Length: 142
Image 1 (tube, rainbow, N blue to C red):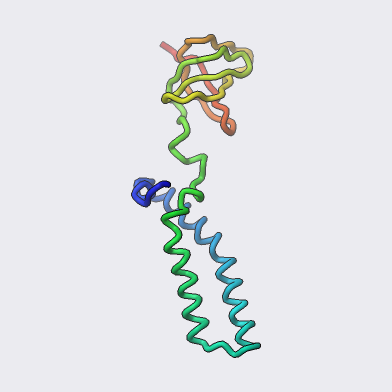
Image 2: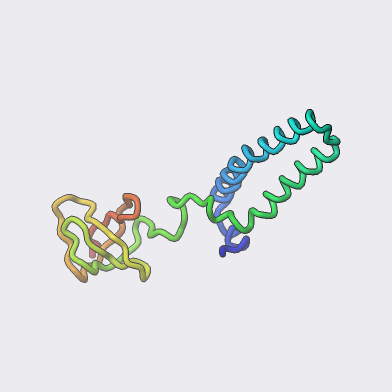
C-alpha cells in the first residue's frame, strides 16, 4: 500500500490532479445520498439534524478513505515509475520491429523510433518516447 508520505512527495500539479479526480468521483454518490435522504424525509419525516449529520459523516468517510485509495487516481502517464524520455538502456532482444530492452533494471517491450532501423542485442539505446507500454527507442550516440 502506498503511504500518504509518498503522496506528499509528488509535485503540486500531480497532487492537485489526484485530489480533483478523487473529489469528482465522490460527488455523484454524495449527491445521491443527499437526494435519498431528502426523499425519505418526505415519507417518514427524518429530522433535519439527522440529514445534516449523516451528510457530514458521509463526507468524513471519503476524507478518511483518501489515504488508502489515492494511488488509484494517479495519471499513469505522469507517474514516475515509467522510463522517461532520454533514459538509457540496453537491447536484450534484437529490435527489428519489436524487441525487449532493459532500463532501470526492468524489461520493457520496445521498438525503434525510426522505421527500418534494426537494433542489435547488447546495443546501448535511449528512450525517445512511448506508445502505451511500448517504449520508442533509438541508438545512443557516442
